[in-house]
Amino acid sequence: MNLNKNKIAGITALIMAIIGTALILVGIFKYREYAIGFSIAGIGFYAISWAFNALRGRI
Image (cartoon, rainbow, N blue to C red):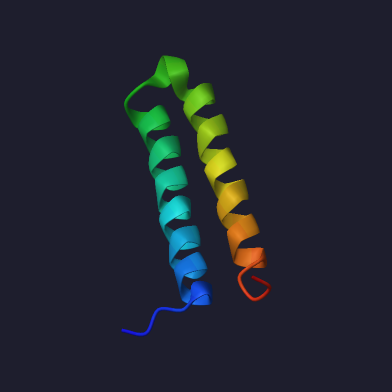
């Protein structure tokens, strides 16, 4: 498998989006009293993964 820096950035963005989704879902279903904190952290992961995806062709 040929991994260059653009593929690594894309895979990283995908993994971070999955982690952000998992954080939001854990906050909603498991810890309702802390759901806002989990949701904010999940949105932060989405923002970082979006930035990685936007910079994928430029690094």
